[in-house]
Image 1 (cartoon, rainbow, N blue to C red):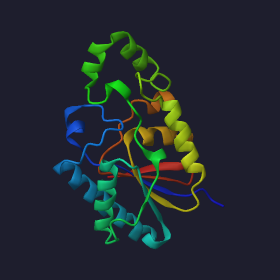
Image 2: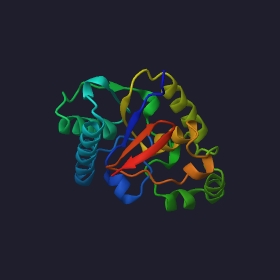
Image 3: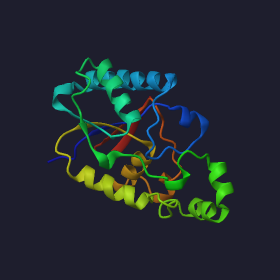
Length: 199
């Protein structure tokens, strides 16, 4: 069976994104720009489905349990004229946990513990903040999620989980993925052994 295609969307912007705060597993709602980005991703998805002759009935829809991802999914489904609540939730798609750094800017995290901050900057894939997660752990759960996919899927999740999926699928290395910007309002298509971004 060919590998499933994933239409991957990062949630739209929140106020914490705009302020440069680490969100992790905190539930921060979309702001006005974030809602526009989510609807824009829905329009991109509709165009991709039309281009590829895809029926949304042939796809699975799944989101991270965090509110910003669920809001984004429902705005996307609204653009596609699909019933808003008819999608699955998978906890493995939740954002990387930043532990005690959640709510802080990078500058604040650095001021709080310069040594730990420097260590994490040098080894971002393996070092986690106190009470947080490493990217290695996120990569393991994204790998487990990917390996159980049985159909082409629209997934709405986070920047951290996108990076981890790219590494899990061999499309990026931990070093190249760690600081990769994952655009809000774009659709990333994982398929045919590669990755394409539409924005």
